[in-house]
Length: 378
Image (cartoon, rainbow, N blue to C red; front, side, top):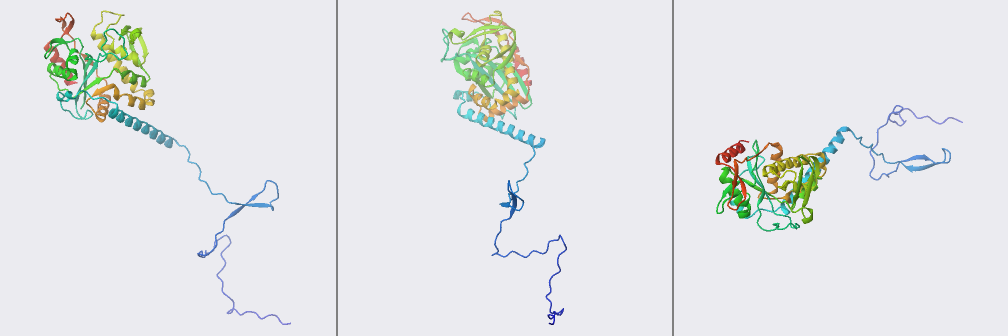
């Protein structure tokens, strides 16, 4: 039997050379009608040989979790702080719009025009009324009618200036239409408008804005801060008739104390200190200044930062002012950047007896001018 015929070299089909071992050959383009296959990997059963395998889909590859580096931790902390500040800002503006009370409309006619407190020098008159809270049972307490100004202070801030001037409420001045009276009576006779008019007449300085402290809401602000620390001398007083009449009875030994909102308000309003009956309104003004300084320090503490949204919501209702929410924010920023200047108190020259038999503090014209000059230079 003869062998099969062999193909000649010309008749043999030509194939491309095989790729070397381990190298991938050229891939043909995938046809549109080509079937799609799912790739499986072999997963051995819990009991069985390697030949007895169960096919299972290959799981998708999951990326590794991002490591917590110091940089990422710092960025997260900054984001949390920024969000907390934005929340507090929004609450302050909302509270300023819906909860804040404006002063009488006639106040604007005696205020001097001024710029934004953060960018330009601004003079603000701060007043506090001695009107008793509605719950007071003190005999003869005034809870709704005209009241006198319990606190009178001028604040100068912005534009590189920072100064404060407290005026004792018993300072005797000439009030238009009422003769010689204690300066705190101007608020009872004509409200904040007359108080501004009298001060501008004696000091000869512009007053751009007015802030009236609402003692009804002041305790809520202090409580929102978690109370306030106060250091000073002995104070024993029955404010607004004491506890038995709906007021507060203070018994503070000399040293440091932590006060809640009602106690802080009572301390600011204490006039007759049973620890030292000889104290005058000058010592009362000094206690107020120390208390304000303690409140400012409390606001800048880490614990108050955690309470910032609550503080932001409770702050606007405590004041009655012609300033809007953004202007108040500019004022607070200017006060913070300006630091804490020493508060000067208008010192009296002597004591004078008024026609009704009350005694007041006499301040000469030269003392008024000197106090105004120091205030404007601050």
